[in-house]
Length: 267
Image (cartoon, rainbow, N blue to C red; front, side, top):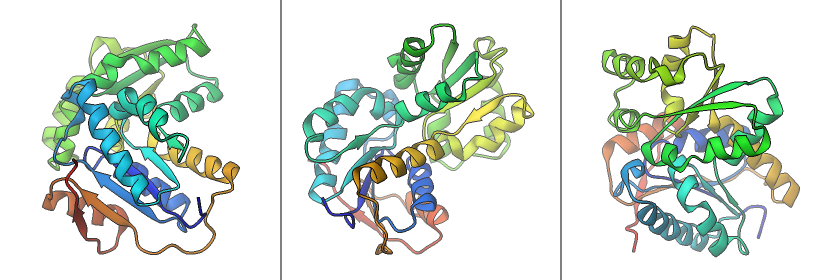
């Protein structure tokens, strides 16, 4: 695989753009190919079998685009499709999920005793964050809460307004999250409302932004494999399985440049 080959990134919608944006800022010479599976969003209420099917189809497409790495920029897909993707594509291209780098970062911090986790129903039901953290340090308490309204709310552009404030407050005031010292945003959509979440806690709880952590992991992994690109890349490419104007608008906000979406239906 050539250093100049692109990095493939996918999510069900705009959430993975937080990861793509973080990778772009940290590794500006890398070309990105982003796939938003807008035809099937949100993934959070889909069956694990359906999520694996969608993810495998996207992974095969990104591999056909000569990607040197594939990032599953979605916690739900990371929970249910990572092993399947790694098994099918792992010999040809490294596959990165958004859960393991976050768990590693939490453990390396060594200062958290009660970690809160919010995400889609599917991510929370998988129990992966609690399981992985407990395997490393059983003394750490993990309190997980499904927040299913947040991702659709963000996809529809409802953030930093009265609607989002009300929904966020309703979720974060749940007794289950009482006395947490950190909160994992276990959905790549959620960094878009990170400020609102941080404001709710008035700085008393550390907000764990997975996008930046994953970008750092990607940089180190590419460096270790000798795959970092040091020549300026050509323009990024953005694909969707169903065209939406809101997705195109969001992508332009993230990358500050004129972009064009290409339609690619999954088989």
